[in-house]
Image (cartoon, rainbow, N blue to C red; front, side):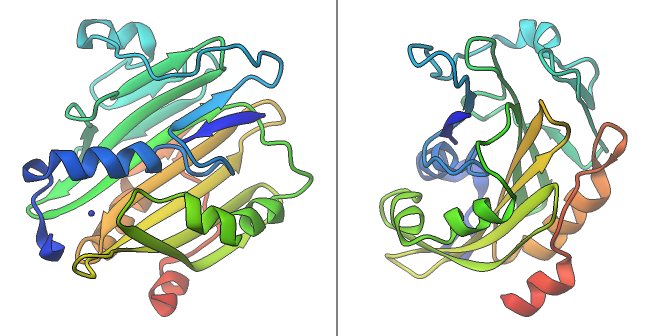
Amino acid sequence: MKGRMSMSSSRWSLRTVPNVLAALTLLFTGGASLMASPAVAASATDDAADCSPVAIDESEWEDYGLVGRRSYESPQFGITAEWDRTWAVDEEAQYPIESNEDCQYDVIRLIWEDGDLYGLLVLNFGMPEDVEAMDELVDGWSSKKFLRDNWAEGFTGEVAVADADDTTAEAVFSVVRDEDDAQFFVTYRTVALSKDTWLYVTFTTDEASFADAWAALDEGVQVDGEPVPAVLTWRQIDRAI
């Protein structure tokens, strides 16, 4: 697969800094690929395909997978996602829902909010990465080049903790805004759902929100009727950060 991959003093309101969030979300919407750019899973056979995100009018969301208020079915891959009442489609994202048949990806963006706490979640259904084992993804995310190139200008990131098993790779990055040392956390999670379909998860939150947002993700979002597969536990993450 070729891919275009796809932060509050520490207490920013999400809705008062759209310009900063837009810059961050641009880089964090499909980071579970090894490529450092906005999230799409591009076809390996069509180098000429236009994988740029395309705005979809809310009136058409049902046609592109939003089959219920809290349920989604990937139009190309048939994988379902459901979420509880604490989550919602991120209607203020530039591209809440995407689908590109030429580049073979479907994307939905969700948001969790509890007062000033938040979590931004991207579920990107696409084609497999060209790797022999999931450890290769972890190695790639940990490389100097990836860490240097994968963040918006004015932010510095490093791997806090990462791991992989036979079907899932996951890394939590500590990302610091250089001007004031405000800290954020970005989680990349790549899951081989089948030999033909992979799920690329990107989860972004801030330092104050992380524990509650992680629990909300673990307890409130399902893919094909099961919690989103993960390698890391909150206990491992908490120890690392």
